[in-house]
Amino acid sequence: MRLCPEPLTDRLSFSLDHCVLSTAPWKARAEVVVDRPLETVWKAWSRLDRLTAWYAPSAAGDLHQGSQLILQWADLDVAVKLDVETVRAPHEFALAANLGTYRQQQSVRLEGHGQKTHVEVIHQGGVDHFLKSGTEAGWRTQLKMLRLYLETYAGEARAYVAEKYAIEAPPDSGFAYLVSPQLLASWLGEPSAPITTRGQTLELKIGSLRYHTVVLNLEEPHEIALHFPLQQAVLRCRQIPLDRRDAGVKMLVIELSCWGNNDHRSKALLEAIGGASARLANRIGVRLGCA
Image (tube, rainbow, N blue to C red; front, side, top):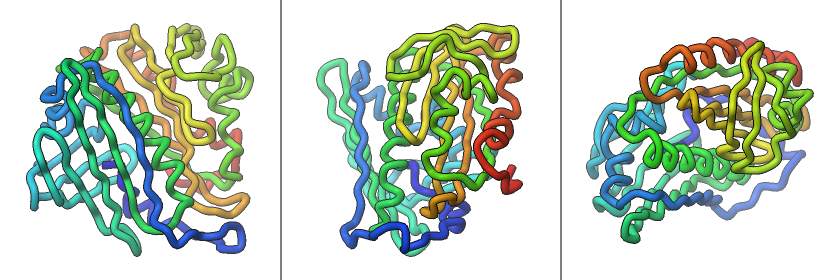
């Protein structure tokens, strides 16, 4: 369901002088094993109240063949309308949408193994391989969010806030600002060590507060996701290139998900990261005024 939305597709301005396009359709793939039974994982995809607890913060429609599913990220001004092409509950389904010149399709396949379920997402669309690596990275993070939700926060409501900012900068110029202690401290907070691997534990000092964090995912040069166990929260920082030029346009996206009652601990974290995308944009590129 992470189909590239129309507002972003419309911004794509490709320079063919900087790359060679393949005529073979691209296909992105991501997978995860969730320590929950097949039926539980299927409900996380097929029931809107479960889907919005780990993926899109707002959803409408249903997952029945021939119907439509509408996913919305209001904070990011993104909405995607998807055609439900096939459903074979509780094992697989396929969604699709016409975006730009090509029709993108995303299929989800579930395979139960006792109390565990293997989840595979295959996302394909068009011949523009420029989109593949970012799409694949995004799905790997999203599936780790699914696993975290089902294994740790299942049944709890989620609060979601997000910011975005457009800048002009080389596609790989911002990743150091997501993992280097000195650079990360310049816009978000100071980590106790460089962020180098998934599963790494560290402290993140934001203002006068210190937070225990675990690296949920790390996808160079696209994004990082940090889990805050005490706050029951995940902070996801992404840079999405929209232009192949050496100093092309890219979107900085900061997302925070908090599960549970959102007590003072998570509220303090929400306040601490406010304006983070603008601060990051000031550090690594020329702002385009896209808030």
